[in-house]
Image 1: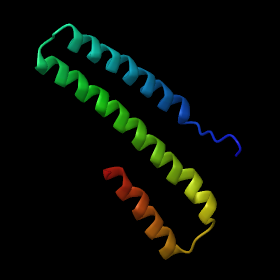
Image 2: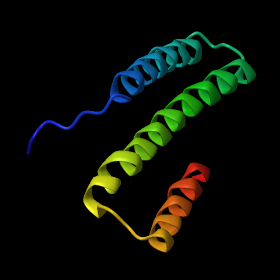
Image 3: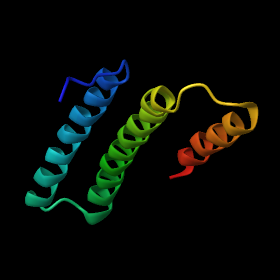
Amino acid sequence: MSEHRHDTHADIIKRLKRADGHLKSVIAMIEAGKPCLDIAQQLHAVEKAITNAKRTLIQDHLDHCLEDSVGSLGREQRHTLDEFKTITKYL
């Protein structure tokens, strides 16, 4: 399998590394007996960072890989594909 990279991958890596750092902080907070509210807030931030990284990866895939494999489309087919790409933003 050949290497597969997109321009957004560097940003996704940064987001995931940041989430990894936050997750390690959350673990330290739990081990130190910090308040549950503080821990929950940090876990929410980790979850959001991972969700945003996943969303960016999926959108990038749709914008590039799917477009490349489908090729040129007629107007109605293009509209359907564009709607599909738009609705995936709500996942």
